[in-house]
Every structure is written in structure tokens, then in C-alpha cells.
Amino acid sequence: MHIGLPKEIKVKENRVALTPGGVATLVRRGHTVTVQQGAGLGSGIADQDYVNAGATLGSADEAWAAQMVVKVKEPIQSEYHYLRPDLLLFTYLHLAADRPLTDALLAAGTTGVAYETVQLDDGSLPLLTPMSEVAGRLSVQAGAYHLQKPVGGRGVLLGGVPGVQPGHVTIIGGGVVGTNAAKMAMGLGAKVTILDVSQRRLAYLDDVFFGKITTMMSSEANIRDLLPTTDLLIGGVLIPGAKAPHLVTRDMLKLMPEGSVIVDVAVDQGGCVETIHATTHDDPTYVVDGVIHYGVANMPGAVPRTSTFALTNQTLPYALLLADHGPSALHRNPALMLGLNTHQGKLTYQGVADAFELPYTAPETALA
Image 1 (cartoon, rainbow, N blue to C red):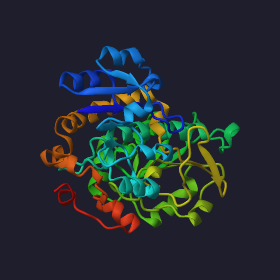
Image 2 (image 1 turned 90 degrees about the vertical axis):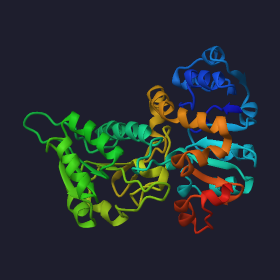
Image 3 (image 1 turned 120 degrees about the horizontal axis):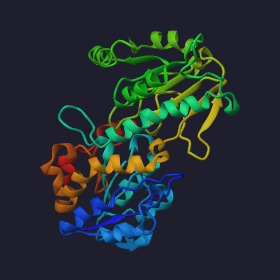
């Protein structure tokens, strides 16, 4: 199969979807790989490294002309013209928060396999996990920075100092994002409260953090009680492939201290804070009712070298399966079948169909 690796063009997105090692593995399996010139530079990977791995360098048009295109982020509007019926696209899509891209993929008839909805039998999301780990850890770094007074924050040091209370970090969602955010926040010395709807998950978190964080059931009442003392609120709620629920509504913002910070990691799925919208690394924050909102939708792009290698460690086995067998690979791997979001003009993921009230076709039916 001919595989294309285009350069990411989303604002300040420096990740790349394949490392030279991944390219070499594909080439050894008999596939050809076209890498857009400069695709890996943001992650510290030179063009020559790809050439040495067996790839051919080309333009964006040449990379997108491949049978399968492997990316990191969803195509943006200037890339929609590359979508076509015979294209297999393997990348993050996050369609439930992006109606224009959903429409473009359906109109083009493109087969879109989304990293974020590939799901194992135990419910885990293997291709979302590494970036959720990165984003969870970054959320605390970003929040700590924006709490500083010179950038508009309320002037709180999360770790405090002897004789002064530390900052309070409230985390909604005890999954991968929330757990990694808690690790970072606790490591800084902050007071940490984490909320989740699963008692079993809360018990697990209480054990792994040796009771050094506070765990609470996630409810509107508990969130409202916590907000007046919260310096940094981190949203880490995920419903695979679907829009995130709004757990913090506009009227709740007045409960938060002026200059406090919200970092909503779920923003690429619509966010769990009603007032959040996607921002970029160039202009990451805005203020609503005195509360700083950080809504960068590609947070891991800030640390592209770490993110690129963490992501490709997980995506490569699935990319190999798709390269070897094309769309029929989905029949061979149930987890990969759940990654199918669009095929031949049909919407094949229930959460996306529900988000836009569009017709849903089961992936097995669409592929048949």
C-alpha cells in the first residue's frame, strides 16, 4: 500500500504521525511511504531521517495522494479538498464537536478511522491514552502558569510555601486525564480534589494516591460546593466519540474566585464547561466572568517530541494492520472496527450520529 505522511498545519501543531522507525517498519513490510518535506521538523526529526528509513520526500499533494494517509490532527478546512472516496484516513477526528468536518468526510465518501474511538474489550482507548496522559500533565503546568498575576491570574502558587495554604486543584473526571493531572498537581504540593461518577474508580484513586488527595462523587451539588475554593479547575470528562456533557454551567462561574483558571482538556469533544471554546497555542486563553479559560484543543502539540514518540508507540501496530489489509483489517480487529467513523458516505459511529441527529449505519453493515 502507498502511505502518505503529510505535515500537520493546525496552529502550532508540531507533532508528526510516524517516526522514522515506524516508516522503516512499513517499508520492510513492502509498503511505500511518501513523507511531506518538513513533516517531522517540529518534533526534531529531519527529512534525511525519513529518507534513511526508506521513505520518499514529496509535497503535501503527493503525500495526500496516497491510498492511506496517517495524521495526528483532524483535517482542517484547507485540507478538505484532499478527501476522496478511495482514501483511508487514520487520525484523530473528534467529529462529535466538528460538524463541518463530519459533513466533508461524508460528502467525499472517505473512510475515516479515528484514533480516539478505537476501543478494547475492557473499555480502554489505547490510541487516546498516550495523549490523554500528556494533556493531563500539561493541564497543571498550563494552569499553574496562568494563575500568575502578570498573565491575569489571581496570583496563587499551587504548592504554597510554609505557613501559607497551597492552591486548590479540582479535577472533574478520574480517568487517564484526571489521574495524570492529579499526579502533577500533587507533585507540586497542591491540595487536590478529584470527582468521578464511579465509586470503584474513586476507591482506586484513593488507594494509588495513598489517601493524599480528596475523592468525591461527581454531582452538581459537590461541584458547586468546591468551586468557591478552587484556584484551578481541570475538566477531564470523556464519553468515547460523543460530545462531553456540560457539568460546569455559566451560572457556576460566579462561584469561582476572580482570576482562577479553568483548563478543559475535553474541549476537542465540546468541553465539560459550558463557556469553553477551542483556542490555539498562539492565543490560548480568554476570560468569562473573571475566570480565565484555557481551551487549547491540541495541548500535546506543545511538547511534540514527547508526544510524537508516545503516540506512535501505540498507533503503529494498527497502522500496520490497515496498511497490510486495507479496510478489511477492521474485520480482523474488533477494537479497530470501533474506530470506523465514516465509510462511503455513511456515518458509522453512534455518538457522532447522536450529536448531530444524523442517520447511523453500523460499521459492519457499511463495510459489507
